[in-house]
Figure 1 (tube, rainbow, N blue to C red):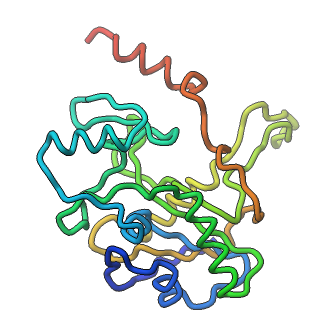
Figure 2: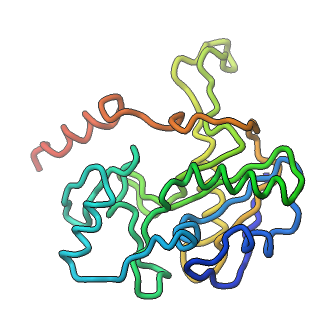
Figure 3: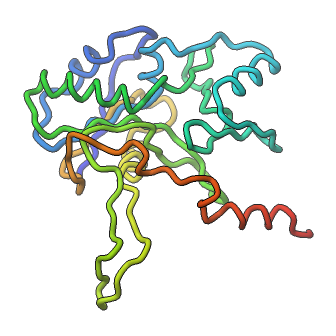
Length: 236
């Protein structure tokens, strides 16, 4: 698999995202995946708010999230089934504004894919909208897929056999977030000005229709829930 970051001009709020993509990505070959950072998707949708005081930011975070709880460092929130700090609201590289998450990343990915397929005359094309997240008990950020289209986001091993003939009962691979992490690693998180990437030869299953809920787990089914509830009560 080859992941190539693409350096661009500075994307402006309200700019035409399709035209921007076409100007920096020359015709990709079949079975490529175009990776787009969520920030420029949000900027294209004018999903920004002028930076205000602490109370105004707290109100905004609560408005943008489904669940909110204060922690020692930042508010932790639940947004569309994903746990994240501060509802994903970002101030970095935002020119004095808060940049919110895109309105509907799956819908946008689907629309972009359709337009790009027509422009590039491709049958198999993937579109992936990424953000970055921290992992519990791990330092640093990794990539996460906010939305995608054109490929299956999960590879299921349940019922298949391992090297010694033992059948997998639960195993699956999170394809979408793995691709997002690989892309973000080369795109960067600072002043690299590489909000796009092109992935070639990815080991994915291309398809027209996807299940938007295939990566989601209900809170009560998450294997870490009871662990962390016990850990927080542990005596020091």
